[in-house]
Amino acid sequence: MGTNNLTYQDVVTIDLGALITAAKDWDDMAQTLDDLGGLYGAKVHSERRLLDWRQ
Image 1 (cartoon, rainbow, N blue to C red):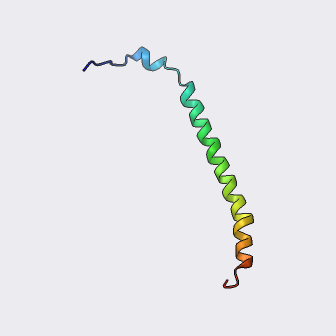
Image 2: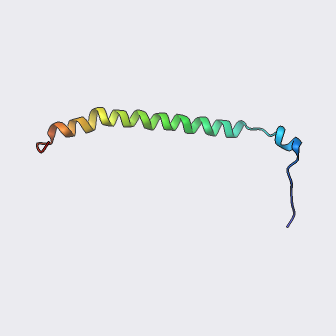
Image 3: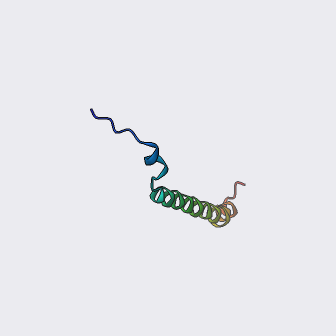
């Protein structure tokens, strides 16, 4: 099994563009899910509570 050790030059010149893009996409998805959770709480959950006669 060969070893391909990273050099200092490899580490300091690595292109992080793909990683940065992926991290931003995850942040955007988390915000979207947070927005949907708020919408669910404001609309769906509150309507269900209004219809629940066992409150």
